[in-house]
Length: 100
Image (cartoon, rainbow, N blue to C red; front, side):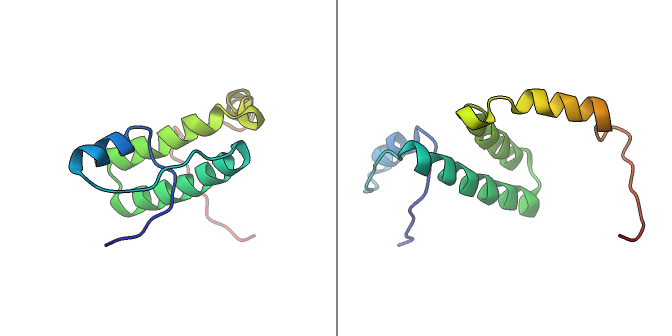
């Protein structure tokens, strides 16, 4: 049997209950929650990188949305828009080649 100890979506315990799967559940502290979200973001980005499918991208976005709700990241949308205005986005598909 596979072992795990990770942050999961809110309805996963309900789904596991329906399947008769046993597990232990606890609620993360605020400090732990932030760290677990960052680990989850890395996990989901890796899965998206490997699979490249829309479902995995949706998972990445869901973790980002959870991070955006944390007090230390609440201003991130304003920062994103500021960077967009100053440096642009990725719409023009520009690839640069050079030396650093």
